[in-house]
Image (cartoon, rainbow, N blue to C red):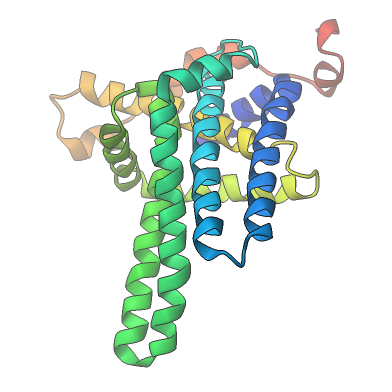
Length: 261
């Protein structure tokens, strides 16, 4: 499943390369502009924090729209950049809450862990360790929030709960996806985050969630089995058969000259 995921997400990213760059540019402009503005008024701490919070909320709103577009790509559908606006109108509130939640989590971790290390001793190190692993679980879970919102819908609390359900049910795969996203951003650093960038990461997560949901559809159809036996017997080759045929294989020539395919 992971092998096919990597193949499909790469193909999808290549086919939508220009659109991904177009989605990344305003997002990066918003992030850089907010950070610089907060730096200008850094001496006025409350105002600087307010700007950073507003920026986080705005980024969350844009990410909701981008994730919706990437969900379409994962489902073999096309989109226009103007679709981002309509998608934002549908769920901008989720984006605001998501952005603020991530900002709050980062703030708590960045302040609390150094504080507990400074305290030192058994209690200080224990609290720092507990907070670190709690932050890791939150980060691994929240990476599923936007794809879940884009593909399954539901209220903010429902999407948040499902994010943690996906993580605890697929911890290994969640770690893999987190590393995958981190590597994409690392590569993006050398291309000014234009590609794959945040949009490419969201494409990967939407691709991953869409394929992973096949597992739950199959488990639901085979509810007569014990959970343990059912999970061991998931026929990934059969579940992915249609996608494998749809995606197909490409040569180097097909990538460079797709119109000759």
